[in-house]
Amino acid sequence: EKPQARLRPLRRDDFERIAFFESEIAKVSFPDDPITDLGFYAKKLEKLIDDDNAATFVAELDDGTVVGWSNVSIRRNFITKQAYGDYHSIYIDPSQRGSGLANRLADAVFDWCREKKLDHVVFRTRATNEPMKAVLARVGFVPTQIYLEKNLKD
Image (cartoon, rainbow, N blue to C red; front, top):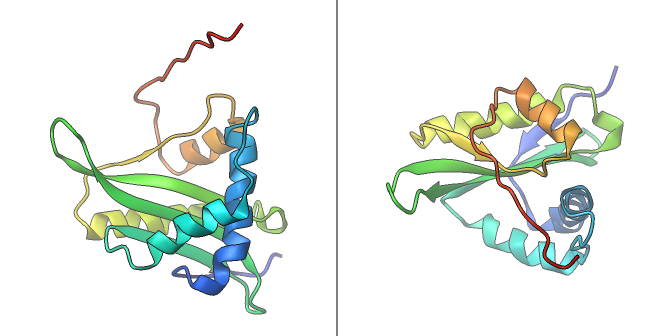
């Protein structure tokens, strides 16, 4: 049985580990041109520390090892002005995959969104990212839009 991680907010001493997680996400999300510069992600993480319109969830084992990460922010529809949760990232260390940690992180995000009185949450992922789509379906996401792209460089 895998050890149970506790969830807590992001701290500055997490930046290096979470930046690594974000670079791993980028490799799957943007395989042709992923951003792997950890400094880029550290700057983004710095902005989340004091952002009242965002929530961060770090999964940490008793020994201090960070094994998961998730974050969400409040956005507004530019036409209707309706607020919604924009679920940006979820990453589970390979050692913890299959432990239920993804569900716990997603539930923490959903609970925060409910506290903020948001009616819905969106998550964008690459169309070919089958593992992520499976996780999203398992925690209740359903496809509502499709984004199509044509490469003009060929």
